Image (cartoon, rainbow, N blue to C red):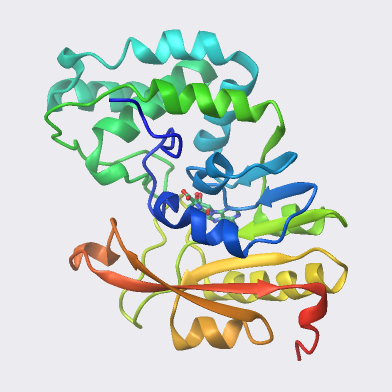
Amino acid sequence: MATPRHATVLKWAGNKSKIAKQILATLPRGERLIEPFTGSAAVFMQSDYPCYLLSDSNQDLINLYQLLKSRGPAYIKQARRLFVAENNTRERYLALREEFNHCRSDTMRRAALFLYLNRHGFNGLCRYNSKGIYNVPFGQYRTISFPEQAIEFFIHKAHHAEIKRQDFAQTMQDSTVGDVIYCDPPYLPLSATASFTAYDKEDFSLAQQEQLAELARECAARGVPVLLSNHDTPLARELYTGAELFELQVRRNISCKGDGRGKANELLALFTPDSGHYT
Ligand SMILES: C[S@@+](CC[C@H](N)C(=O)[O-])C[C@H]1O[C@@H](n2cnc3c(N)ncnc32)[C@H](O)[C@@H]1O
């Protein structure tokens, strides 16, 4: 069966493939779409802006996307070799994870291993310990296919994309009139005890959530619309005061600290130059 156009190269916590259409219906048009929290780039894959800036703080993610853009066919050749039945065992997974953790200078090999780990590891998690060691357990999937069509489609779209490893604040500060920004930060906790921010070795703090909301207001005030998504919680509504709010019902694939899969509402907050009164 053909891979749907909207499939992403990576499985990713917080992947927006299923709600990308609704997000795009809310996003204003513009000359360039900026995603400061790119993750699996689900919105990029389903949209058609003239050009893009994709950025994220995760070095492995950005290394993979930069290689797809600059050396796509060579990458496919190298990564495809890892997707064989013999490599879908716990022993091989642990050996290849070990190789990944020692592989620092060969960026092509590291990017191929990153995709292998993402597809063979548990639940599409991307998790590192405090020393930056990737430690996701084996996923135990019966069959795994190489996401070739999603890769080909990413390579095709990447001709119109600039790809940078960068903190969200820098990315947003660099925006100019004509840009539109879609921000999908690590989620705010659903409750005081539940939090899920293990995308990178750094956690995403409440201070960063506040800084993000403030930057969204600043960008909007200088003519750059910003759409933010997050869990629909009282704190999110407070943080996004002044924005136009839209509610979406979503089924989560990756839950908070293993407390079951369930429905969590998603909030979209649109800051535009004319939303005005932000104080
Ligand atoms: C919810 S995920 C984005 C999911 C994405 N929209 C998708 O569809 O897959 C959040 C992303 O924010 C990135 N991130 C975390 N802290 C960041 C920071 N300070 N600056 C930029 N990106 C950051 C993580 O690496 C992760 O990829």
